[in-house]
Amino acid sequence: PEQTAKEELVNADEVPHHHDMEVREIHISPRKIISDLRNLDWSKVVWKNVILFALLHTYSVYGAYLALFAVQWKTIGFSAVLYFMAALGITMGAHRLWSHRSYKATFPLRLVLGMFQTMAFQNSIWEWARDHRVHHKYSETDADPHNARRGFFFSHMGWLMYRKHPEVITKGRGLDLSDLEQDSVVAFQRKYYLPLVLTLCFVIPTLIPCLWWDEYFTNSLMVAGFLRYTIVLHITWFVNSLAHWVGSKPYDKSIYPAQNPVVAYLALGEGWHNYHHVFPWDYRTAELGGLSNYNITSLAIDFCSKLGLAYDLRTVKKDLIHQRVTRTGDGTYASSTTKTE
Ligand code: ST9
Ligand code: ZN
Ligand code: ZN
Image (cartoon, rainbow, N blue to C red; front, side, top):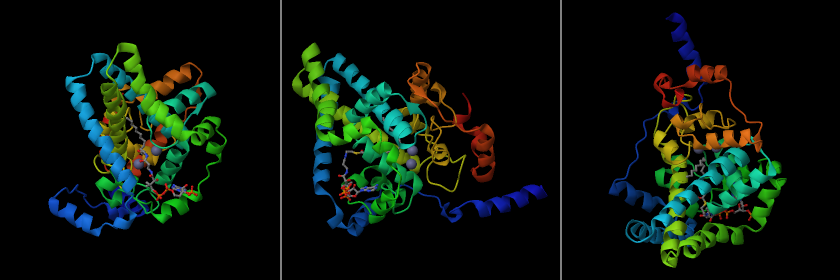
């Protein structure tokens, strides 16, 4: 017992930001909203994006109505397939391959992932990976593009309608992005981003149902286009908002990112965010892959690795994980859902 008490003391000193362990609540009271709006620097709001997001959401609500009452089943199924493709473009492509280099991919796989990532319309791979790298390196500081300290809404989607903090740009310029500059798929997509994104995110998804099974143009555009796009956006944004706010912290209790099973389920395995911020180079973005952890993305990478399309998959040694759990975890590891496979 003496030993443990001493160890705890030592460890408490080692944990950075230990004083940040305050209990945080998501306030959505009218009073809080009004005071937030009063304190906002309105000159930094990017109105063009506010208008575009408002339009997109209006069309998506209409799309949800059409999906329930008007469209053909084939169009729903098709939209679900598009959701998986776009989601994999983000998780397996932009995130695990291009931002973290947690595995390597041959040209054909990079080409397909590049197309899938374009369907998700979340900025070019280059911009996505650059912003994500600053997010990891400077989490929860001014240099983090979606700094969760600035509130739930800001970290969810507010940051995309607001001028970036100068620190994001200064610190971002200090990153090494040479690997991205040398990647032909990344460079090509960056060069022709606008025409590519309009074609792959909206034109082709709208045309296929119209030409193939005579779906109405409006049904197709609203459901397979706007609604599917909006759903993938919000699920992605939940990783920055919900998974930085709600969940247990078995690996490091001093940081915001948390283990969130709901987000993991929706985002093809990307909700085990406490683990991911501690060991970002693990290709599973979780301690374990597999279906029981909803880690569809890991299964897809494993599958591609069997085909020889993906290689050099990086993981973390169990010893290292367990050491870290004892040193900085919040004590929930034993009951953690990610532990069973
Ligand atoms: C979208 C992205 O939705 C979502 C990303 C989410 C990430 C999630 C990560 C979670 C983990 C993974 C889980 C995946 C789960 C997926 C599940 C799927 C089912 N470093 O940007 P500007 C420079 S996008 C260095 O205009 P403003 C920049 O190059 C949605 N430099 O800043 C430029 O320089 P120059 C659709 C940087 O004016 C200058 O600064 N897209 C950096 O403040 C100005 O840049 C949109 O909505 C950096 N980090 O505007 C568009 N950043 O002039 C959103 C910038 O020399 N973007 N620079 O070229 C914008 O409109 C603007 O960026 C802004 C800020 C309004 C947000
Ligand atoms: Zn994060
Ligand atoms: Zn990451």
